[in-house]
Length: 287
Image (cartoon, rainbow, N blue to C red; front, side):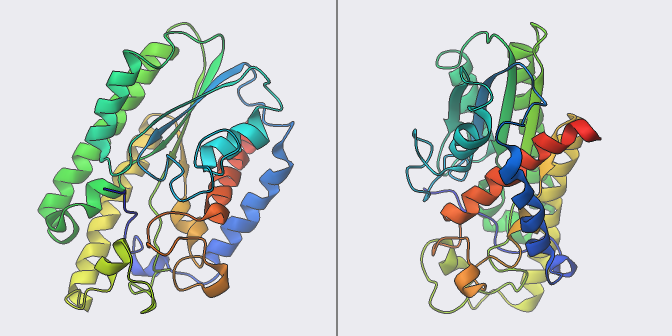
């Protein structure tokens, strides 16, 4: 099953006109980052972890060499020119929730991932969409959402702890970037009638009345708050995809950056994520 990105915005009030364009404009400054991304001066490895968005699903070439998945783009355009011996690894699983990604990471740490690296490690994590969207009770019942959010946060903490135990023990710096979940409806809760594939079919369900949508908005806020809280607790950086994609979802016409399945970024969307991460790397030194 392909991972599905969240249906609605965090809160109805988050849908402020122009906020997505502002985030995109800010991210565009990261295009000058090639040759200047040096927060991790001894960067040795980039590791992307998560579901199908992390895997670059629907981007041309995904995360293969020359692919347009955001992690591969960041590696090739912003980081490898500065760190020519840089290694790229991924632990991704289309359709996986955070518990499944954690299980995959445990397997990878026992096999495919190096036991040591000769420098710093950049970790990119995108999980949580399937924790929320895969179960109707999680979307609509706050008690179920609270439990799912707690599990998501716990799984994030365990992933990060395992990676720090492996790679920070030798004194290497571990830089952490965690994405939140964007809204394919641009804060409207609906998408144009022509979009019926994949997760769009759920969005088009006429049983989702205004009351249920408001409940889902509240419950989605709980999930995203869990991501934000654990990222802050771990000293990582939240990559705000919700703000950046606002105005570029299914209602955006020619400015749409999400595929016709209402779930996965198009190449333009993956490039935006790449620029947002590069901007965080570039500006961190000046804080």
